[in-house]
Length: 100
Image (cartoon, helix red, strand yellow):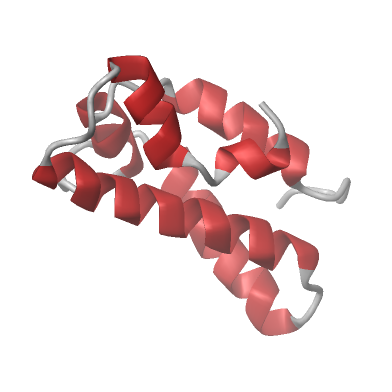
């Protein structure tokens, strides 16, 4: 998976299921797609606001809770996606800098 592929969540799910997503899946795909696009964008910008927003997105992607229907893990479960794989791909997109 390349960095361009990470932002194609809808295409990934469509290929995996061989069917167009149903309406609730489209909503979850939109949430995930926006988060992936923002993560990629904020990873490339170096101002303070972008660092803060990237930290918030990173926390969302790393969170293991499933109480919210819009939690990352909940979305992945609903779309039959592997959250660990997506996290690995996101980590590869980040410029090499200390985490913390």
